[in-house]
Amino acid sequence: MFGNPEQIAAAMRQFADMLSASPDAGPVNWEMAKNIARHAVVAEGDPSVMEGERRQIAEALNLADLWLNEVTALPSGVVTPQAWSRSEWIEKTVPVWKQLCDPVAARMVETMGGTLGAAGLPPEAQAMAGPLMGMLRQMGSMMVGQQIGQALGSLAREVVGSTDIGLPLSDTAALLPGGIAAFGQGLETPSDEIRLYLALREAAHHRLFQHVPWLRGHLLGAVEEYAQGITVDVSALEEKLQGLDISNPAQIQEVLGGGELLKPEETERQKAALARLETALALVEGWVATVVNAAAEGKLPSAVALAETVRRRRATGGPAERTFATLVGLELRPRRLREAAALWSALTGERGVDGRDSLWGHPDLMPTADDLDNPDAFVKGEAELDLSGLDDQPGGPQEPERSQEREQDGGDETGGKDDPAPGR
Image (cartoon, rainbow, N blue to C red; front, side, top):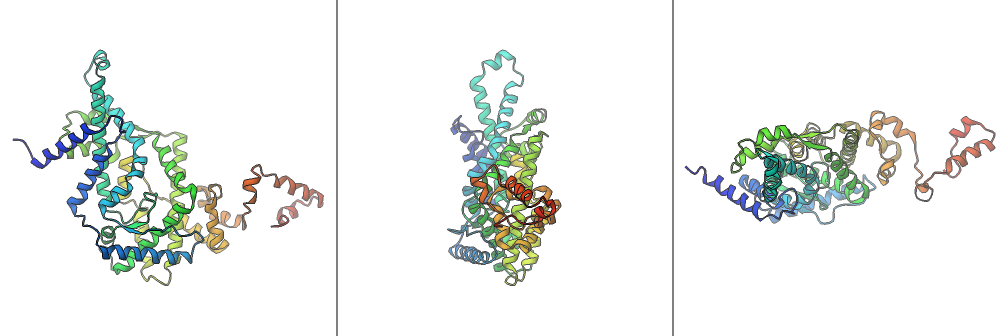
């Protein structure tokens, strides 16, 4: 008569969380979201990391870091390598998820509160329903928090480290023994080789995120700018909210799941943010693949096969991408991974490791989407980069001086163009 006792208990806990949340806490009840995510992973089994596993992870990350020293000019990004359980991954990455999800969640909560509050009420009654609207917004915050908690719980069962989706979810290099075991299922590869290969990828990502100061803000800023153009499909939301039973978690997940309520506006600003994000993700993943393959060559027999497994997982869109699309309405897919990896490989051959990695020194030096279409032009276009004038000569007066020198030398346009400037 009263239904499933476990469902009733869960609904009561969620209702208590909703009432205990401050009205000014933000668009998402993150404490509730974390609790739901942790319950989801515990229900599937989330054993604590054993001391032996922590030692194996730390040794793999430290060894991977040593190998990377031979193939990249960027210094180490591994300071205190860690091994996390799935619950620890949730706890450690929530601050970044909050930064990524709050902009879209705020729009959904406001729309949800307005839709629920306006349903069937005349304008006079709506004007007098201020406290009720506040509670309805809290209810919307609870519903969105439940969806985010379910999504993070699902994602925590799939990830292998802190950098799976290509974004810096933590400042600490870490791997999940449970995630590594799940990744290796069905692969005829020794577990220690899988662990070391994934440690190479984790350590390579952290070299970029720790020592390229502009990269973190560039990636997260592009996501936030894209999210600002996300709107909520009000008509679809109104239809789904009719007859909604908030004590039924499965029904709430069905209402908010899949991201179909999130509709991006096709503005030029949003298209530019999406293009910038996709290009940056491809360049990050391409560079990581290039240096990891170089570091593993001759040392890990299964490196090529593991690289292809990872590439398919990233390029075709796995659980991480679908979860992220549910949370912020955006697919995180490095669509041009092969082109980016080929460009970084060509740069290594043409300019060497130092010349290749020096491009990370400033965002204006980085390849663009057009350069991925024509990598040869970018690779061979400028063999040496003189950065001395960027700080003290922002206006770039050197070019007019070179023009005057060419005129004094006799106005040989062809020779002046081909001859290098003095001192280069």
